[in-house]
Length: 415
Image (tube, rainbow, N blue to C red; front, side, top):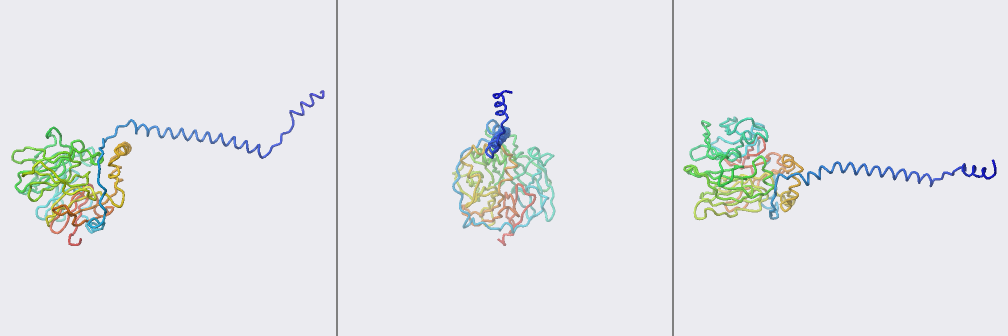
């Protein structure tokens, strides 16, 4: 080996000195590579998860076409509206024996109500008897409700018969003794170019000649009532059925969720709960002002359901959801944001959304001029939940519910 070759050999095999800096560079290179792989993996996974969501948001049709509407700032929960626990003094009756006793009527001390399984029942003492069945079984599911029937408003006529509004089937007259059922108005009937999709509440004149009733929507059925509330479509109507001529006439349209109905003492007008708008309207059904409408009370602290007369001449108004102030009201917040409502109904089912609505039962007593006289509360619906009606009889307030499996009875002398 010559000298030059020896030098090359020694140069190639010169030992390398490993320092802390070189190790740090290697660790950084390895760390950078691992971080890059992690980020790419995370982004890929995120894309796989988010792409279906974006597909739902942009391509899936929303079941509702919400309208922009405006509610005034909710009234302060003070004064007459001051929260209390008076409804918690009520006792539950027939728990797990009555499902959804929406509305209540009485003949003497015998109570009558309609239940979620399409039945009209009477409550006598401690026993429940089935008077009539309006629809056809099976019952119990959302899909079966339209054929099973869903009795809502119930009244006693001058001849001692029961007048019943069934959400899916129409108006009926029921003999409480024999159980005989007479169909007055079928939902198959088209009235002034529109079908009856959500027959809700009713009242009968003292002579039994006229029956006034609400059709909450021509677009949505009862099982989709939350869609109706959130969409705020003004397709609710007040109608008149003439028991002599058998004719059905539209008295007023353009209402947002026409709900509970109560004849005024002079029978020239009816009070109608316009649930979505948190107000009660007065519709003139006879006399010089027939065909007109004004506002009985507006900007209520909750969303009104049924309206019934009290023994003192005032009105009981039931509410199962409120607009807390101070607090947060979801419907008030969303009233000006239809795009958010569309997105919510794309992502979540109506049943899930209903579970997210805070339970709060409220019953107001309003004077003949619409002024608040007193309020009865059950925050969180601990005893009386999902109240739909307050029916007064013999010093007690019987609380109906569109969802709870019981009736409630409140001794008014205690509150």
